[in-house]
Image (cartoon, rainbow, N blue to C red; front, side, top):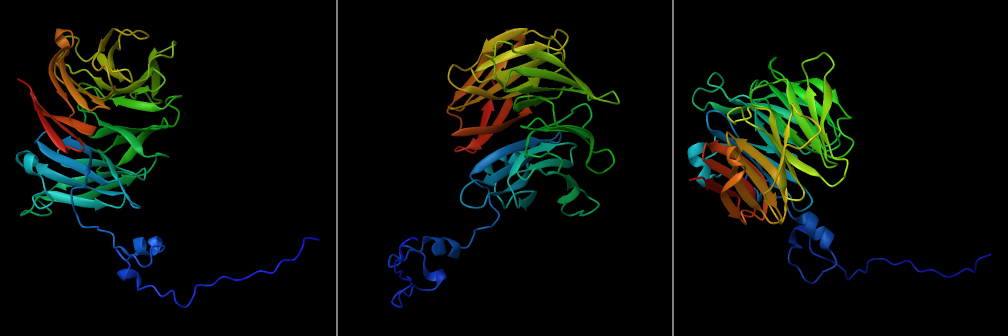
Length: 367
């Protein structure tokens, strides 16, 4: 039998009488009540442009959508806004054409049609919002109306792209390999194709062409690139490239525009070593070209605009624009763009906007 020991019950002494919770802020007489002090602070939920600018999109009418998130403290949440092109250099909550506060982070924004905005939230949901209607409000036509909502991804959406040839169709992907093709033609958000086994490794890139709405390309961290065709009753995929040497790790991609010399047959792929690889969909299983863009930092995003390819990097953040018709000749270079670069858009043939953390928005103008 274990020896019996006397015990003593400890209780809060009567002399311990802290002030009410709302008065605990900056009170140094009771330093051990940090939890009560933290709970007493009211959360600031006022609409504002948060420090993390995570996604930006533009439609054919040059209207810009911006997603900002609060990624600190106990609760993460975000907002998205709409601005005219003329307000880009002085965006604020007051001059936004529309704004909405979300319960979760707003990870990705993409315009489907001019008046339909796709919003990927941090809780795996995908929403479709109508942003403009003179019928609902003739005096203030910019107004938000929820068209559809769906949650079919097991993890948050990491890639979202709209087909330029048919803006009523989009494709989304999550890093676990789940793919969904969305159809907005019925004034709703419905999934017309779904798969949960697109890649064996982490999916890192999703590219759609400019001249077709039946094919798209995905890539993963293990060096695999797949071409998907959704025209058949049972959509299938074919392997464009698979790195047997296990030396390549793709991070992002972009499908070439039809204005290039090669038409819309080239797909550009960025990797962790700062290189950009070219794959011709007509000649699978081999790399057509490899060019080094960054000697320090991986390629985080690729964005095509006619013959101009914008390559972005992180750690450190940098932007390079090259002319792919001239052997990937770099025509623009900008370093230390942001503390962390998150997204970018082309506003015209020679203007690139990048957003991120730190310096929120930077305009890059080509000569």
